Length: 339
Image (tube, rainbow, N blue to C red):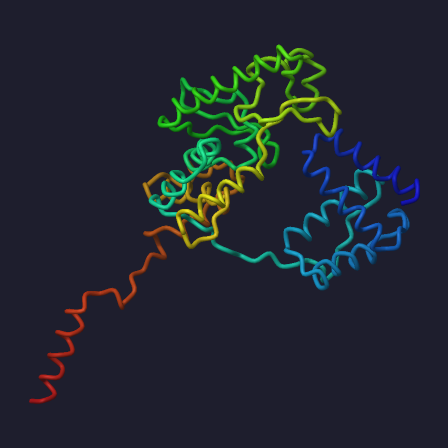
């Protein structure tokens, strides 16, 4: 790429970090902006506009057949480029480019299936899956939990910087108090060993590292589920122990599902869906479930009412009525006809 493009991507990266975007989002936005530029033969975005953006997004939808969420991500990246980096207007309507997001019901496990999978999980990852189901956490929220986020006194978990940059509180299951305390003991021993070896620092969000220069080595800021290795931070270049990777959890979960032979498409997020559905089945108010999940709109939470065993759509199939009712009716009608 010519130097001009490289400088532009550097500006995008700098803007993303100033606004505290997640590292994963940073990589995705840089990827889509680069794709957009290469699609138009390395033309500078300042020389392009509505027509070129529509052409790129239409190509993604019609030629590459990407999912609606993927196309929206590309659109958000381009919007960020024009509005924030180039300071150019991005208020024009885009015609016929949006891939339609399909409306699908979430996969939900029965309680028996949940515990079958948990029993087959590797010891290292079992507690994480139990938290996803027992507290309704997203997988990224779970791996980013820090020691200070666990409130054993009130049986609460403080979930920080969640989707939409909001904080919330959710349930800390009583059955997980002991396992979590044992996990913290192992983590603390590892942290103390790291400190003796000249490490022990952890990534701190936003400007906290500058404001509290020694906080990154303090116990309360450590991850509850640290990585087994010390790695180099891609942003700062420092060697640190990050949290456990989400890919490792997904691999372990796939292995457990094979053992159970459950014929459903199960991901870590399935346990969050099951958490919400089972709470509603137990008679908990939908607003309570909304708050525990951190949904902005109750309509998002309402989707779980469509997968309940009982509720407004839980009609009974006519085929499931006792066979005797059908036979007695048929027999009487036949007898009447014979007379």
